[in-house]
Length: 187
Image (tube, rainbow, N blue to C red; front, side, top):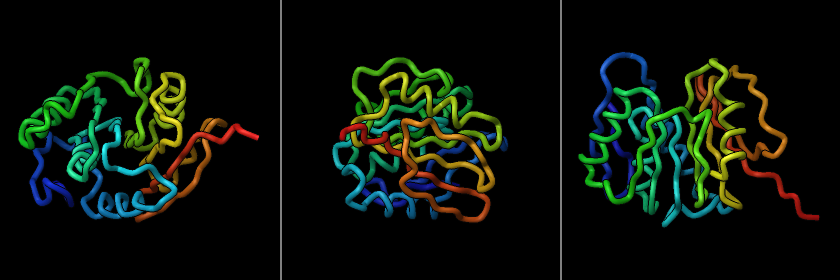
């Protein structure tokens, strides 16, 4: 079971896809993650544009909307997860604040309006991290001052593109969360 942790939809249960292919971010980790994002080094979640890549149930993007984000775009390849995301959007009546892209986060379409927060939770140890980060940068998905929050296995040794700085990371059990921002190229 997964639920919205805080905000206007606090306590609402989310639908889950059948099977064991989805590994949703735990409620506890989501609460910890959003608490960290309250730090002044990060953009304000209120009215933010959010992307949720490898979205699964959509819990991270829906949590952001519940906490005041203006828009979330979900990217998910698995048909059952896309159906679940759409059902959770309908459950919370958030159709106007969302967009769902059925496809791979490794090959993102160009974005005319970049995102303030990009959550990515790819399958562990399958080589998705680096190509997805490169796709984010190449496709104009990351806003100036925006942050990428990536969940990966604690022992994942993925290489981050040179254009990104690792600004924070936390490990909890078998998972690690990294916070990445575009390097400051000014003087």
